[in-house]
Image 1 (cartoon, rainbow, N blue to C red):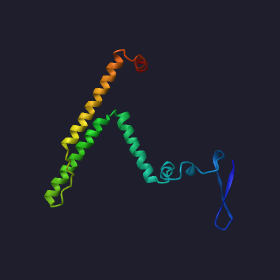
Image 2: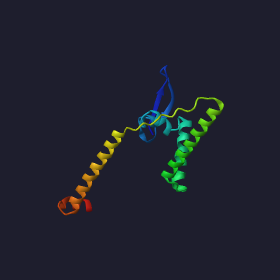
Image 3: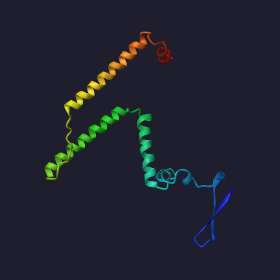
Image 4: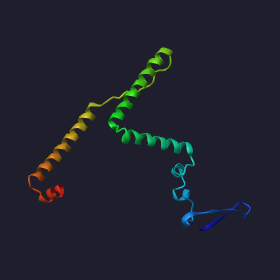
Length: 146
């Protein structure tokens, strides 16, 4: 095992650092030396523990309980709507400022343009599909079917 001696500001040797597996750089430097390395090496313990707990909770929900993402998303949306509703009712009751919810204004022309673009591309896709399925392009037929 190579031993790297570290020196302090006076030039005197301090405790020798041992790098495992013959590395010349510490693991923190190999991992990039930033916030990701701090989290992976547990130097920022609160963030590392929070991340571990969050990933474990997600794993538990999806793998052990077999919860669906769509169901989870719907429950989060319903809970958010309930919180905003309770906040607006209590704000009115206590005289606080109600929560400011941005108003979504949809432009009819932009919507029509998006729908017509989607319709045009879907028709092109179906036209190509029928062209290939009709036997007019056997190379693409064999590439798709294999």
